[in-house]
Image 1 (cartoon, rainbow, N blue to C red):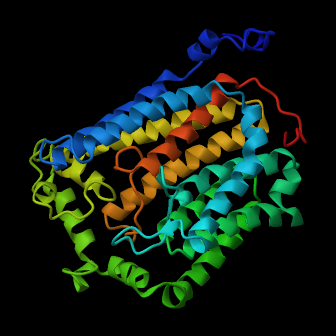
Image 2 (cartoon, one colour):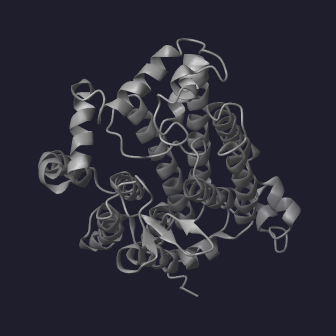
Length: 387
């Protein structure tokens, strides 16, 4: 369909037209990953739908409808909601710290959940959505020069820094890391000067060692040090990485077969339904299966970035690229973690791992990406207003 057809009065509002403009390749790839997750959760439960597979499947079905529904929404509504949503998620993080509604799941090591009675959520997951939208809103209203280098950049830095510090204090290092990296990715996409990026990289390298030694809790520091030498504590903090590597290696080229992974079936592999589910894929389907899954993730990222690049609105471009960035960061960190290339920080593999808050965040994010695809010719003037 041509640009003129989509922008003709009344034409863009037809539901059939909007549905035809959805990128069904992206929807299909997201469904493949989620169905793979369902199959693996069924496998590691010993061929049982409970306790994980059926919940994962039903959640995805519900969130698939939500994602398509959000794709029908005009980007102006996301634009108007950007700052209020950011404020809401920051307040939710603060509620964990200063109200009785915050709690720490057994064995989690971090007080990072909010119990609202009818639902329990992890606000740090939704911070990423609010942050991307707020940053995209800020950059939409500022010039390319201001995005490259200006004293005004203190505002997006503060937007990133506030939730980063609050989440890190919980302490939830994995979520804080993703918040920081997602914010940095949005600033990069918006046109941040390479000199600033290089200076930030150098500053990070300089501050990481003292932060590890003096700014982390002892168990977090042990995770980082064990990552460098997991064999130094094979039955303690190094156990997770060692078992994950065993699962990855035992799969070989074609895997041990569906439901036949000894590391996961005999429960040697820790957190096999969440953090280390990719290790189960590698054990049961080998290099070929794990490579095919990673190829799906790569295709999702490339299609989403293509959608972002075609948007006429600066807000839509940056927000869609930002949503894609935090999805890609999830994949990179979890993949590096299970391979022993990064410390274990509790980051799930998107749509593959079991977890409601993570799935909800990812699917809402892709709802915004698909909205960008459907309304790619929409223009949003600067200073559009909050209401």
